Image (cartoon, rainbow, N blue to C red; front, side, top):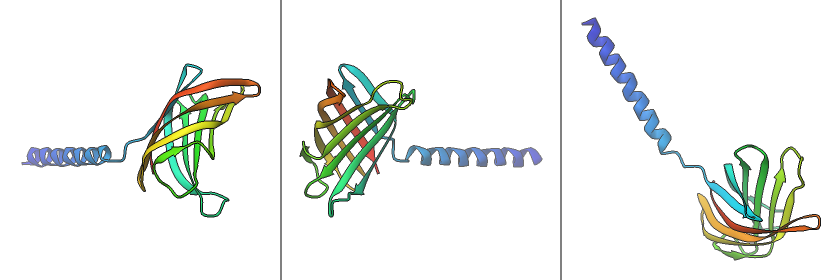
Length: 151
């Protein structure tokens, strides 16, 4: 009789753990953020995104933020929407940066970036981007940029 109670308790615990595990799998997945700078690929290991107000009245900015898997580089893309948050192609009010977290290498920054947002709503945003980033006098092509972030 006692063994039966122990077996039932173990089954109850395992069922509870399985249910918790299923709930964890239903959590919104992390996004992605990657690009190539002068044919060197950068991928974010930890990507976050959010929409915030700007100092310009009535304007919203999408911020895609990430850190590479070795925590060596910080990546950030900012898109300020001229006429409200919506999908489309944007070439103005864009800022992109790739910075060395330990400041052992110079960082790259650019406003000559074009972003195509394929979808955006209150839950997530997805798109592609390309352009040019600079570090002092050095210019490098930014290609194959993709992102998807969840809010």
